[in-house]
Length: 264
Ligand code: NAD
Image (cartoon, rainbow, N blue to C red):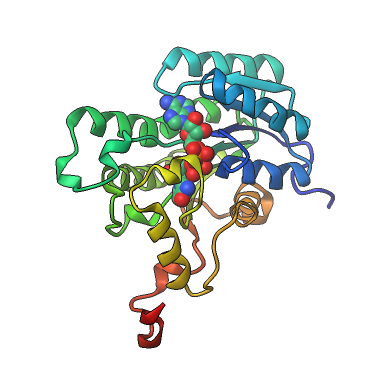
């Protein structure tokens, strides 16, 4: 009994500002007693993340660019020195050149394809391997994905392909680490108004369509993803691993909207 995350220490990667999904999850974890270290990408984000991290009592705030192995080495070196062990990881990082988040997938360049895959997919595997080494008593990891991995969404393009690979990597990592008591899951969030979300072409249209054509007919807010993050990172989800957990208002289950809804 007691707060779900009391005595648990974890790394939260991907807070850019107070609209970030990683921040929604961090707030839910903080409410339940978790101690967190945060990473940020570049000084400009660092200035935004610092007061957020401090507001939840975090004492560890580190720069990290996931394309740079040395920067990841340095993060995990610090965590080893400060904490020794780790209980959970939140990975909420993705990137594609904005110019390829519109138009046809077919026009993706090799350079942006590889970069998008590196940052949006491989980085989770890279982080997971390092984190698992610090989880002698088991642990839990969560990454963020989107339905564009499974079905074609306008303008999502190379990011959909990267998310498909990310979802597959969740299953492989869950199998690799299962014997160590480490669970690996993904949250598939509906469209949200974040920095990354707004980089995708026609984001407003997609956001509105998802609301009106979901089962619940509601938008997805940070607290909803936060609740799912808390569940997947706490013992509430013991024995749940390798899952893609939808927080999309039931959008993905709908085959066809009711005829009268088409006027919306
Ligand atoms: P966000 O812009 O707040 O977060 C994206 C984060 O990725 C930023 O903090 C950015 O600094 C980080 N990042 C990008 N490249 C990096 C690099 N090289 N090194 C380190 N960090 C890097 O937007 P968000 O919507 O909160 O995105 C978080 C995750 O949620 C992403 O994986 C995104 O694909 C996923 N997601 C978003 C939505 C949505 O609609 N916004 C829906 C489903 C899934």
